[in-house]
Length: 409
Ligand code: SF4
Ligand code: SF4
Image (cartoon, rainbow, N blue to C red):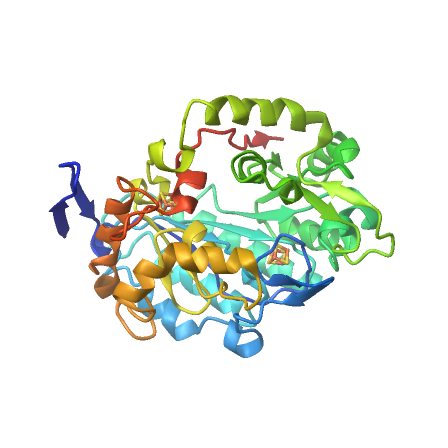
């Protein structure tokens, strides 16, 4: 266990592998969709191109052997939650995703494993656009979820389908290349196989009028929960207020690949935007220097949780990997350069290989001094030359914004 005293006299403890409870895992950087805000894309002039810093295709799929060596009950005796989600891809598109799910549920999640030191069952939550694979795949997946539920007494594992409308045209406005009818067929098959499904609805100006109908459809089809996602508003509103970048809240029709270039979609629904921005403004106004004065409480460290990316890299959370990780560094992009500069101290000090599971064990990674440096940064300034505070930590873990509320159907 790494224990030390930081510059505020507070003891910092980075948990070892044996205490790790939860991971967000990205099985693949691949995805058939083209959502505008996704890190798999970069804007280059008027075009949207695949992020040149990422690996796709076979190289974008995590190796099954790596999953099996990391998710070993003997090494992770109290572990109980996996979120299959990430920054660049849709995990279940991995060609061996059924094999991986079976391993995680039936071998790693085996309730009777002699190495298991908790009564809590392994829970897996998958986030997906749901618009790929044949319906048979989703039926088989549903059966696997049901089998795990019965054998290992887990009643919470679920697949969360991101469905942002109730017809093909509306759904495709944000989730380009995802066909609403296909997602619904796949979700129905998953539910028929015995899986537990949730409906996540990203709300925009262009679909806010369909939210209530979507909830009704979810209920009729047998989804277990329905929820509206709004967490990105916090970040967009913060950028608009603190960095005075009003464009951050708008998506142009052209960028969405639409013929109508003049169309402009607001990321924050107009009906709620004014009230929400006022609320953020009031909170930010309490500070002279918001990024340096606000207190940070690391949501992921507190929950003994980590991010594992498709390339085998391990991060404290998905917010850091998505902003400072391998997906950044696009030449000619001002925003990417700013983010690289913010994170330069950590790359200069520790390099970029120490956190790769293809080169180091999980325990070696967890006991690396980087994690103490990040914890120290929460008490430092963004301008410090040693262990500087990261803006991302403020945006994600200082602001007490609204959280999603899931509603049982
Ligand atoms: S579905 Fe997810 S991974 Fe695919 S483009 Fe959209 S946000 Fe990115
Ligand atoms: S953004 Fe920073 S403070 Fe928040 S969970 Fe990630 S590492 Fe922790």
